[in-house]
Image (cartoon, rainbow, N blue to C red; front, side):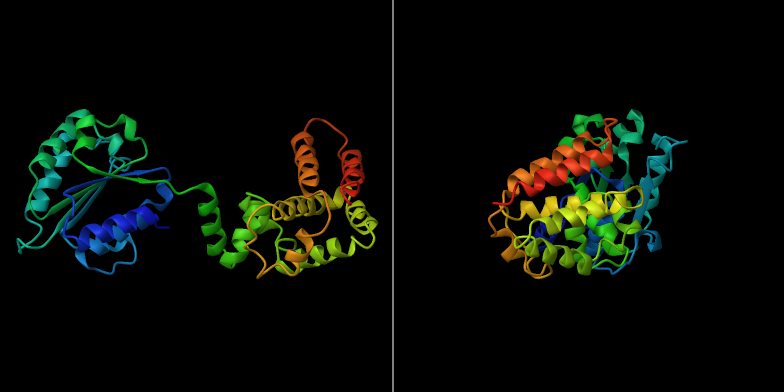
Length: 303
């Protein structure tokens, strides 16, 4: 997964011929680090590698502070990398890229050695340093690097994982609004599908002719074997309530949702009631009675 700010910075630096000699990627999730490193390598070298592991050309050198933990990215280890890079290309015009991943795991002696090289870099060498703990780095390292903060939020990561599990992007975005648990979504695909959700919306619309339809539907699920289902529909209904006061971008996949959110119903009150139910669910309360009480309170939200 690529960070939008990184792609813009790298593209602009290449277009304006202002490529920095040293970049520091401050990333909050190493899971997507290689995606962003790969983008930088391909952009700088005009290559088309598919993943970092397949890069074997001599003018790209990668060292990982975690994998080199036994050496702690020692001074001798870093010097060896620099010596290797000086012989990596027969063409002085070719760019060389030296990557130190998880640089916070390097020793201070090693970092000082790195600092000296960064201060007087070869004209064709680009350093890319990465860290998940920028505060632990020497100020002099940070002051000599172009820092790119890569902050991939949890929701974006979750959507990406769902897409990798063969769920369409627009559906993945919807399901993450209902629950932030990827595991629940993947384990309950019989519930997390557009047909089920649109059937529930139709039921909600019918309930404005007879409000007890919604109550009876939820009540039939209020038993031990189907508690997962009643929780799903409560979470779904809670999300649908939010569409009454937020920008609705789901009308292309949710049938009649615009009609539902314009109905005379105390959506905010229902949202709060459901929120309170889930907040107290694990407080040793009788879940069956709590759901019965919640159903009665939701029915009072009809105007």
